[in-house]
Every structure is written in structure tokens, then in C-alpha cells.
Amino acid sequence: MKNWLWWLLAGGVALVGGVLGLINPNAAQITSTTIAGIALVLMGLLQGRAAWKSSAMRERAGAGLFAAAGLFLGLSLLMGPFGDGTLLRWLLGGLLIVGGLAKLWTGRRCQTDPLFWAVIGAGALSVVLGLLVLSSVGLQLGMILSLELLGSGVALVVMALRLEKTASG
Image (cartoon, rainbow, N blue to C red; front, side, top):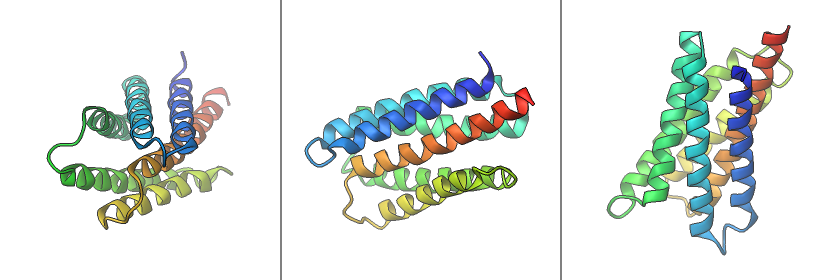
């Protein structure tokens, strides 16, 4: 399987998880968090596979960081936060900000691509969501995670299409 296809699959999983999490986050907070946790774990595993198969060290490092963050956050959601949830809030906020900055960094390399703004928008969304989490704004965790999955899914699909275009062209 081509490397870009792994990125595309990870993006597809993230998009589906984000949409499913947004369907009814008010009535199903636990369900949306579980769906987001499962999607993050699957996305992390698929992105870890993509990182493992990447030949460029920068690409491997970036994908590896995204994969580790997705796996850690997904497993934390599925197993439950430690203590009163403060640690999870700080970890989630920090991971969202770091992930957003990484997307912005990756997106700047795609400036010639017409879909450049999708990656930049996904990065900005992650940074804003991270800041909202850290400032303890009363948004539901399921809503935040679903929006993050949608943004990450868009960024992964765009990067996969860019990789496919460079591989075939």
C-alpha cells in the first residue's frame, strides 16, 4: 500500500469520527468522547504506520509526533482522566496547541498547493481549541474533540492528496 494511502485512511477515520461525534454531543457526551477516543487511537495507529514507512526524516518525525499525541489522547479518553480531570484538561489543551502549531508548520511547506489554506485552517482551529480548553471555557469535551478530529481529518486528507500528486507526478 502506498504511503499516501495510509495518510488518506487516517484522515478518513478522523473525519468519520468527527462527524459521528458532532451528531449529538449534548445527549451523548460519553458516546462522543468514546467515539473520539476510538477515532484518535485508530488515526494514531494509521499515522504511526505512515510515519514508519516515510523515507524523509522530517516527515517521519512530524507524523510520529502526531501519531503519539493521537494515541495518548485517545487512550486517555477511553480509560478516563486521572484525578479530577485537571491533568487531562492541561494535556488536551497542550496537545491541541502543539498539534495545531505542527499543522501550521507543515502547512507552510504547502504554500504552492491550492489546498494550502485547509491545512492552515486546521492548524489554527487546533490552536484555538487548545486555548479554549486551557481557559476552561464551558465547551463540552465531545464537541472540542469532534471539531479537532474534523480539522485533523481535513489536514490529513489534503496532505495525502499532496503526497499522492508528488508520487504519481
